[in-house]
Image (cartoon, rainbow, N blue to C red; front, side, top):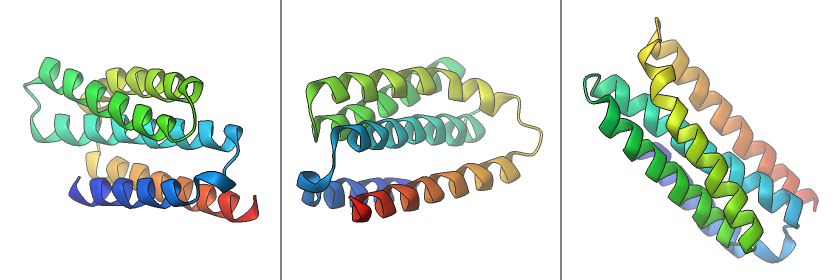
Length: 130
């Protein structure tokens, strides 16, 4: 989870520098990907660590996702802020439910990490092409 936080902070400052090159549609995708992945990863990783604190983990993952999606959305405009925050809140609400039913949690966590990295690479390539 520490590595994910460092990656998200690094991406935030990179997107802040490249803000002028990023269009609104790409900005919306960035906000939704970063907020959604923050909510998903935090919910799953926390519920695997603390399986008997379902309600608290749901609230924490929802807050983490909403704040992350909102911060990335505020880089561009308020409509993207609302879209990123609401998408991340919904994913943050559902992610602990996914984490509780996993039969092979390590495989799923590695899969979600790989999807997160591939999403970031796709966004960086799209920024460079814009």
